Length: 252
Image 1 (cartoon, rainbow, N blue to C red):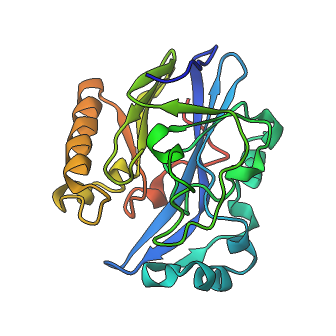
Image 2 (cartoon, helix red, strand yellow):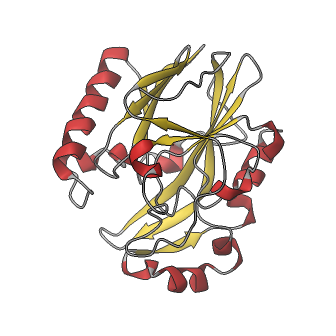
């Protein structure tokens, strides 16, 4: 259950937002940092995740040192072009068009501009919002929670016709994924970091906050995708990201 919130319309198009490139030392592998914009036929605009903090567009090296991120990887490209506002502008939209923000979870590459939409309610898992601060990065909770109307997810639920929010703890305590039905594309599964890349399934979700939960929900999501013949967009797939349609293009 959760407190009541619902979309008035159904999704008509979805855009992948490009928040930059990062190299994970393990592998190594180059990953895209992504967010999503979903428009409904009622004129609503849902923004899912907001990328790295603004300071990474100014001086990524200094920001990496400040946050202690260098042990995990390095920024390859995060510029002013890789912010929510600029990505929305590519779609002919602006921040004032956003009617709902969703945080898939609260790691550093997903919450960087969470403060940037002051009049917009935030949908987030209760397990994440219950934390004293957003998770941000290992041992460094540098952000405060912005003052917002929060709608807290405690189980799977339907946000609106053709828009399902799936609670998939494992990678993070309150990891969310999304199943969205579009008029032409059909069902699209946005795994976020519940499955960062297809290879993570075979790797047993090593390094997750809760490995058994991550394995369970990874299998659940892939079964659901198979049942609905859904297009799967992974959270950080090195193979998928270079070929993935991104703003200003839409999935319709």
